[in-house]
Structures are given as structure tokens and as C-alpha cells.
Image (cartoon, rainbow, N blue to C red):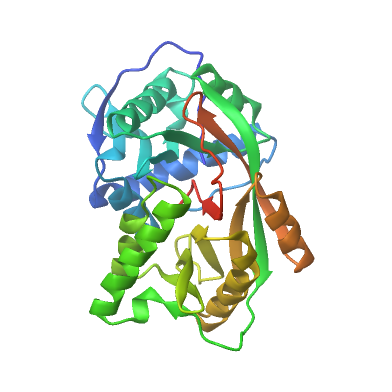
Length: 326
């Protein structure tokens, strides 16, 4: 999710600096104010975007590592003026969340924030560079297009109610350390076979260490055929858990999709969440139709945009659903 505009003279901001855990409270202020203002401009007066869960912020900062960038006021105040959480999973690079404080929007700060993120991803070998934005917000689409990003298809968030299955799912976090290391290595191989150069190891390990959720492993005839990285922690600060959010889903073959969905719904039930939320990229129209047939509800849409020359390619076989938001 991202907000930018550009028409005023360039503001005096300093950075980028690396974001740290101590910056989370200040990041939440900029995040909530900027997105609330965006909704107001889009006609949704009175909508107040809540703060993100600090644990989710920590995940975003630690996942981005040196790509967790903040800019500060010039003139000695030093308050956060903008931020961009820039992530790369092997060759896949994406930005989010990113925002500019309301008084700096339209000043040229947004261009600085995005261009620095793009440069960092290029320096780190990204072959895919993208982000997601609100499809109804023409300002954002035009802004990113002016920086070389090309609109792709929608990402559609669908939800299915939690439901028990005949067998408990295999979860990485419930395994012994030896088995966990072996399964993590097998998951890395599976991801690389479906999408060469992609690597979700850091996200999987962070999810486990921060107790945000777990990674579901799907087997068929003893072989690992699917991996789904899931968060059960609430996305919003102070709220109880409601959804099991699937951040990454990889399958060796599309035919295993129904079995993965059944395992995810069971995991949601066992983890005390009411439903599974899965973000389906528009390239996977058959999977979208399959979920609708299962009774899934459409909850949200995002527009996926990629830098020209750095577009993602659908795998030749299997399934790769990679969330470009936290």
C-alpha cells in the first residue's frame, strides 16, 4: 500500500536513514495520518486508518533489513517525514508500506523515496521490482507511472471461513530443530524450482522468531509439494486475531491447490482465527474461480504495478502467490 503525489517544490528532508525498532511509534503516526488523508481525498471522509500492530512493523523492518528507509525533517527537528520499507526475496523486490507525511505530500519527497527504493533493489540484484496501490486512486497510479511503473492486473483478496479437516496440517514451527532445518531447506528448493531465484527463507524464519504465525507444508505421497507462509497475528494494533493471512504460497503443481486450501482452512480453525485471507494475483484466474466456487468472498482489491523491464513472470509450472504487502 502506497501513497504519493508530486507538484510542489522539493521539500528539505534528510535521508535515507535505516529504520529501527525504536522508530515504530513514529512510523505509525505517519502511516495513519497519510493513509487517512488519502481516503479523505478519495471521498471517504471520516475514515481513520488505524495503527499497525508493532509486531508487524518489526517484521517489516527486519525483513527489509538495510532496505528499511526513513527520511527526517530538515532544520533540526528530525521527525520522520517519509518512509519506504523495501524488501527483496532473492530476485523478487517490492516496496511497502511507504508513505510521505501529509505536509510533504506533493513536494517531490515521494519521488525521492521511490527512486531510492528502486536504486537499492537494483544494487541488490532484483529482477522483479514492484509495489501495490489502491486501484481507485488515479493520483497514485499516475505518480508511479511517471516514475516508470506499469499497471498490471489486480490482486484480489478473498476469504474463506475456517473449517476443520480430517488431518492436522504439517507446520514448520511444531517440528524439532533438526526436522525444521531439513524442511526449511526442502522448502527453499521447492520455491527455487517453481520460481528460480526466489527465496522466502528470511520471511519464514522471521515469522517463527517473532511468533507471528507459521509455515504450512503440504505433502503428497511423502513429497513436499506446497509451502504457505501464514500470519495469525492481528494486522491492526490492539485488535484480536481475526484472519489467517497468507503472505506467500508456492505449489509444485496447480492441481494441489484444493488440498492446500483445505489445510489452510484447518490451520485457521486450530489457530483460533475465523477465516483465511488469500491474495490472488490476476494471472491466476482459474484459482480465483476455484475459490469463488468454494464460497470465498471478495474483500479487497489492489493494483499491482511493476517497474518497466522488471515485471514478474508467471512460473512455467506450479503456483506462486507472493504478497507485496505486510
